[in-house]
Length: 178
Image 1 (cartoon, rainbow, N blue to C red):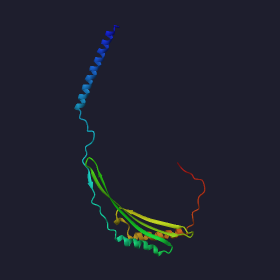
Image 2 (image 1 turned 120 degrees about the vertical axis):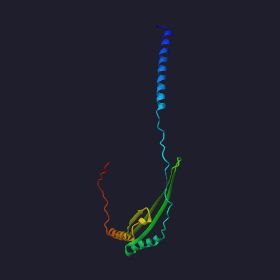
Image 3 (image 1 turned 180 degrees about the horizontal axis):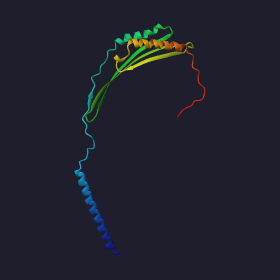
Image 4 (image 1 turned 60 degrees about the vertical axis):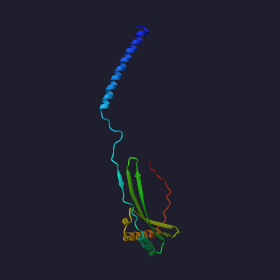
């Protein structure tokens, strides 16, 4: 029929039927989801706690005489104009805390022994040379015998550099690879 009332009632019946079907499907799905256990949003982990021992400050007073002995090794060469040895040591303690109760406390140590020497070349240029040792702790530095050998090698290298010819500047094409 082509009457307005008949078309409106047909549309209402179809719409109402579809609505009731959708409502039943929604109930089925929501009941099925309620029965299925859901995983938590965030995992539950045990609270991690770690704490290093308190910082150990090492007595470095014995190193003052060692450093003097190391720098005195350069006095054996007349051509060396400067020879120094220095020791640097640091200890830091880092803390990490979060709102869930985790706490981490860590120590970090760094020790640096620097040996530097220089001489003046025939053309008046100063030629420096350095040897640096990095370790975590003072007791991991090389022995005095190793350091003496390294200083002797430095002196020989400086003497060789003193008499070495100057490098000629390069003037030519440069091929650069991407």
